[in-house]
Length: 331
Picture 1: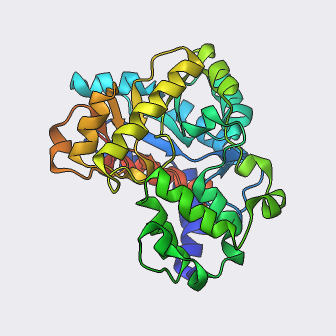
Picture 2: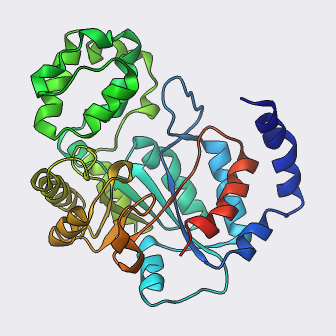
Picture 3: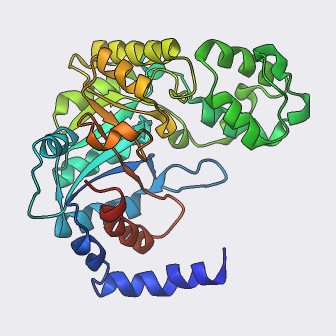
């Protein structure tokens, strides 16, 4: 980390937040509505295991800050505000969580209930079918240190060879489910997940079960929504494969929670105009991006951007960033 970044995190941002100066960013923004996305909440983040989850102590401080400075509404409500072109008097947030980790059930849900906040959790559909399912990127994270990239036979999926973790990740992201199974069988020849997974705390990788999703949905504060069936980059696989990912995940989640599923968040923010059309055809009405990717998005009332909370920075840095995000990710 550069010296300037250290000074900003340890001196500048704490001073900005302690004086309330960060609010100047949000008050100056034209937009009053913003959707945030988290990737899990754990007791002790370990970035050698996963870059996604934020520390539970910091997450609580976020909620306390939101209580004092913003209104927090459901995602469906914020979509309706957008469609009605309604500008709330107070800056307004909706909270979302991607992937559907069990820590959402154990740590996030109790805090949301304490603060009486709505939220939406986006679930990877194959975790509904398989209680032992693990997201492909966690699987890869756990085995990557022992992989010899030059010995991975990518010809089994008719793809060129890879020489780095980055190249392998990019390859996996654009594979449909059938090809991904073939490639992971190839990786399994080098490192078996069952031989290494015990080294990594459960709260970093365990996904919620169908019953846990059902309980959260029944409670009323949390909306359970879809994050595809197997987390590919939907904009990089065939439209037919994307349609299957969208349709299957919605069906599985609805059967589990016995409620309609009306929202989908695109894995890695990847989508196209064709994927948006497939999403609407699959029965979704609220489509969640990261950054807008299509020229049509600006006037499309079905899709909204989200600002991703960093898990690798300080509380004060995140608070400054959230206030700034109203300008770049707000609507």
